[in-house]
Image (cartoon, rainbow, N blue to C red):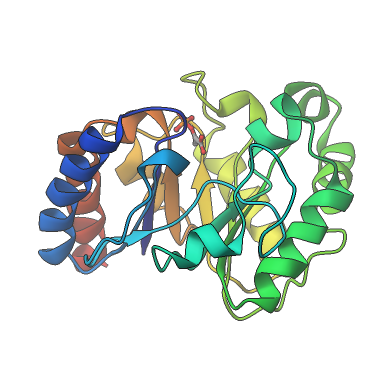
Length: 235
Ligand code: PEP
């Protein structure tokens, strides 16, 4: 399974290095694929089993894009994984589907592993399944769903950082729908934590998780990695 941590705008460079060192010890003892997305200022060349990716980058090699980083800055550290379409970039930072698709095309052309996030806000969830699925379908516009290095993360916007989660039945239902769109590994994300990860990972068509706040403590994230191993060995 794929167990991924999005550290968002948290931890200093020094704290991140210690975090990755600790998580790497757990990853080495585990069968899971462990990914960590630190803040951009904490990127570095990590010689670890843990795969380190960037939370964002501009679709360019280099150039006049103030405040952004491009391929040249990622290449410096050998970073080949990127998170694209995260709800905070869509809804807080205002990225359009068109721009997201442009990023996708660029980083696909560079062979990056792409963790591509989709998910509906609360109003769309409440509008009923048909409208919700239509909303999510629009987030696949311009995305190559057959890209070999694609991982999709289903993350309902209303579940991110709120402590709320869909029911396990709802996760199963939506993942079944999303698997019809792409056979890429499909993660669930949104308020996953130590005390619900086992349930979430047991749901059909859940190939892993993307964890935000609950992954901020290496010890907690390690417990989640161990739980994934336990679930896999029980199956
Ligand atoms: C995320 O940011 O991708 C996420 C899932 O956050 P949280 O686990 O805090 O809901």
